[in-house]
Length: 138
Image 1 (cartoon, rainbow, N blue to C red):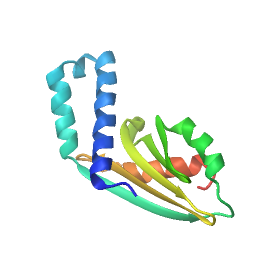
Image 2: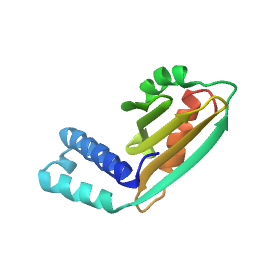
Image 3: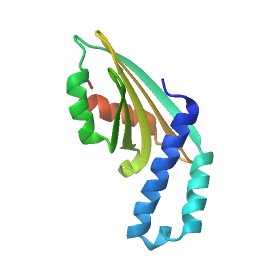
Image 4: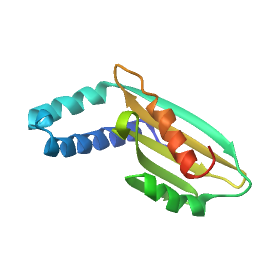
């Protein structure tokens, strides 16, 4: 399972990269100071987490690798039968979520973490739903 510090770092890096992309297309987010302040504010936001365990007939790990590559910007095979994903979730899929999937012979465990600001978008829960839908389990 990912450690809290690892999750926080992944979320901040993903948000920072997304802000840089927005800066290229919007004059609102241009400038290093604006970018730095946005990332600092994001880092202080509350981290929401969600977890689900689903029974399966078989180990679906081989099929999941390909399906998760289509919905995730980053898909890391941490170890055998274990995936770590970076999934866009929330409003307009602009809020990054870290999703960890552990595949076993008879079940699948999915945990997700995301930062939430003033309005709780249930980003972690939505990220899990996106993954389960892609696998045909939702």
